[in-house]
Length: 91
Image (cartoon, rainbow, N blue to C red; front, top):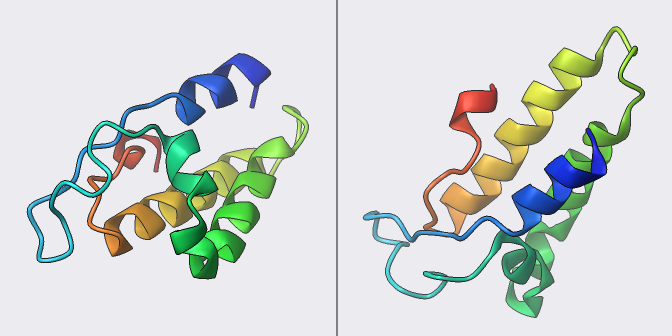
């Protein structure tokens, strides 16, 4: 993943979902704000693992699979926190 793409992801605004976990807690925050929030520390391991999958060389044969898994893992963390997924179109 290119630096510009990652920066765009980090600046994406979050929208809370309509599940019992959703509400207004994260509305208007960026993905960067979200991952910096100390209240989600238990989920940081999942996020770090997911984002580390995005650093493979573009010629890596496993890149497509790793990228899909990374975006799915990040969406799973967002959903767990009551936030609409950001990356469904990428997996």
